[in-house]
Image 1 (cartoon, rainbow, N blue to C red):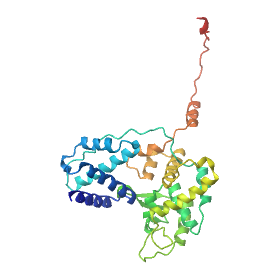
Image 2: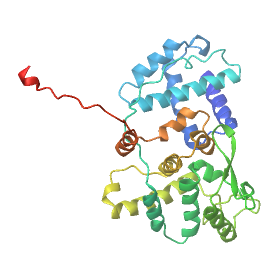
Image 3: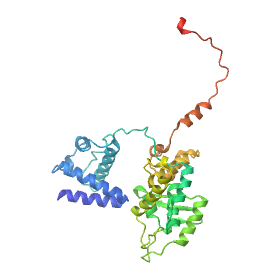
Image 4: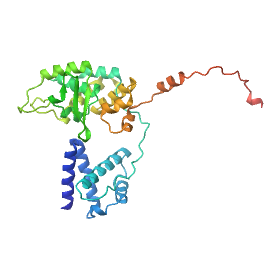
Length: 307
């Protein structure tokens, strides 16, 4: 019964903190698994060693990234318990993250590939779906931010939108002139909501706010159609988040200050933004070719075989 109270408090805390539905489901599952692991052990007696033991024993055969997501869930769980005064410390806070492979090539689309992708958005609601694509690929929105976007969040005169990101943080994002013009058009063509007071910018054919799953499905169908024509893309795991990834990469490629990219992406730490800096072999060659070494003296070449 006590565990039920902990889970109820955690669910309430995540809802108040503005976690996405996907994150809430994952974190609830991780918290429940941990509570089963500790059985009847009171939260007040949980130490750092307990958390480490759980990660080692129950996450032995998973990737480092998965183990780190579990740790993030536990940190949030204990923070919720702290906020509700159910315990006095966060035993997961000082547990070190697993080292992840930093040289894995990131998945993103180049500018010409983004342009080609738009040709694969089809169907009765093509224009609405294209607007969704533009917001993720050229404004960097998360799928949850697209889902939560309301009419009131779009500022036509300023050419910007206000999005509710992670941690219930509001962020105003300027739009390109092209995207702003298209958003005006989409607002005029917007489907009539089922409920009169529904303020969602993107509405489904049933007159309700377009769900995160529906948005993901729309983009997934688009990517699959594109992969059928481009064999070099078939091995890539393309998703809504990869469009956001492509946006950040495009900004940094265009020499936009990383601090500005950080604000556009809604990151709390610049270290998070750093994952979008991709150093390619051509970048290295260009950097080296920019170096000029004047007046290198002639050196006598010694035949080492005769020394």
